[in-house]
Length: 407
Image (cartoon, rainbow, N blue to C red; front, side, top):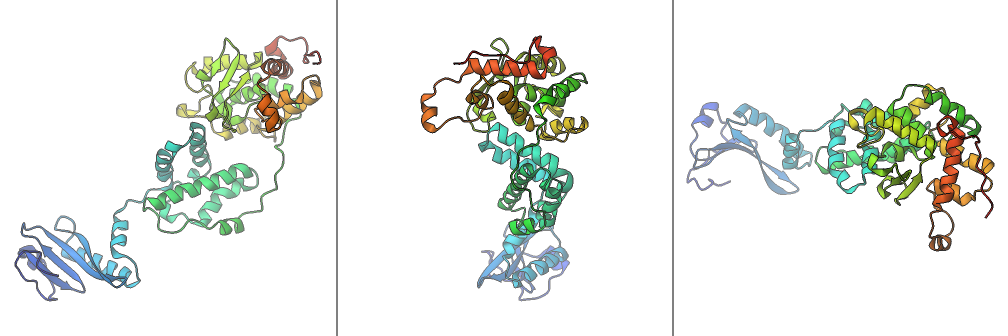
């Protein structure tokens, strides 16, 4: 192994002692079985292990003496790494792996979020953090990422796999993102849980079905009941979701800077929308009243319906309001309630208008190319009528139906 330029020899395979190590002059001294003490001309001492990996010699630095380890500790470490080397493993990589502090899954979620979210929309980043915080962290948050197994992932997914299949699929993908990120950082050596094993350990998900919806005739009674209860972010967000026929995520991410109270519109930026296209919602009296209540509760800046510590509400917060009211339907189902109401109670309004109010794409590509208008006046008439229907007490309307002249 040479003398490191020190001009001194090294003791051939002789066992070192604490005294020899302490008094060693510049040079290289063997302790046996590939372990050496290296002493530089400056007097700095360190232990080195010589092993073979893939037919080539590896010199593995173990640490300095006495700051990092003693002779006894160096022998223990050398014994451990020799054993791994005999198994065909890279001793240097294994040594470095042991130096890494392995984070818990909860810590890895935050670290992955901080890095990966740089390329995400705000909406996607919020959904990533909220879903993992709610569904996975309570169950596996305290486990180190190198210890997360297929059974751990199944334990997270099982309670929501058939009840909330869409959410469960997203949580599964996001767990894998965190574990994959952990592998890239050297925190995890094991491969990701196998998709087939996950499927074998979970019940078969129901095939695609419509979201359970409150019959539109029952919506006014539900709305009035909730309106008479204590104002909370979750309850006001749910009522605003109903009044605007919006998606839950759009409401939970809504900010005051998106609202034009004078123009009575909610200008939703592209990053807030499922289709990635900006969309304007006309605000009826019911929606405007709910905004007033939200402002009185939390102020008129930032998120309109904030959760704890000013973070966006989780999707479960709105669902909890439904469960507390002993309703089994979904929050998203209120969009179906609105659509059914529009079809039955507003026959003079073209179906295209209701679809545009729901921020759905309408018509063929050719029709979309020629349709320059967003039909805002007709959408406002439709949404005002919906507000009158679900919350007549907030609208001051005499009738639940607004008739428009046929085009």
